[in-house]
Image 1 (tube, helix red, strand yellow):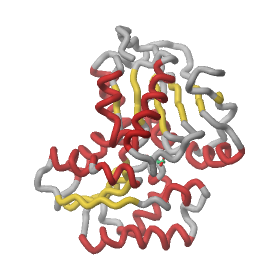
Image 2 (cartoon, protein in one colour):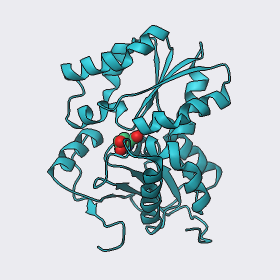
Image 3 (cartoon, helix red, strand yellow):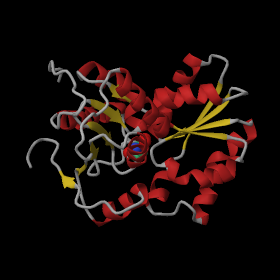
Image 4 (cartoon, protein in one colour):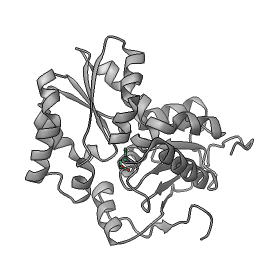
Length: 276
Ligand code: DGL
């Protein structure tokens, strides 16, 4: 998948996730870069990725990336922590364009803001199982004490629209209790869904714990990279976003609205194997 095409500034940014969660990253990119065209792919037919094996996640990631490459993107944002934790090397080795994931920006921010070096990370089972955040933070700050915990119920609770529900509060109190006991001063929200739960998570861990939103950190990196490589869009045309999904139904419509903050009109339903 490595043709010799040099990216051009007015090509779109490609963003993909296993589904709707990456819309939190999309919003962060949109806020920073209002002039860019974006193609967003949510692999809604195969979500969740976070409970699957690294081999399967890598295969899905390559298929998602190949689809976005067919839309002539200039930069790929892997807006899924699970994919970012197991497939970055493969994607970077395979693609002729820059690839930005969630782990490095989130890890850098956590290493930078933590005073005590006691850092918590929450994510899917696959992300936590990979130990990717722990190694990335440790590489920057060898003195850090990093504790990771998977919080699998956070994804369905968020998608149910229960971010402020008492059930979510009970679940969060259970998952986050070890971090309170350790006395972390920084917690990485290592899953695209967790920014939706931010007020609840902050309430449970306490106001003194700094929450790192990996998507927001990644968006800052996207802006920097485009500037450094002179790839920032310079057209006067109004920017467009094309939302693509692999499965579209009522549930998606409802959940996308939670993540996007507004209804998503007419996403394009695509077949990743070219059978549109
Ligand atoms: N987008 C995934 C992540 O950030 C969460 C949802 C899933 O398991 O696919 O890890």
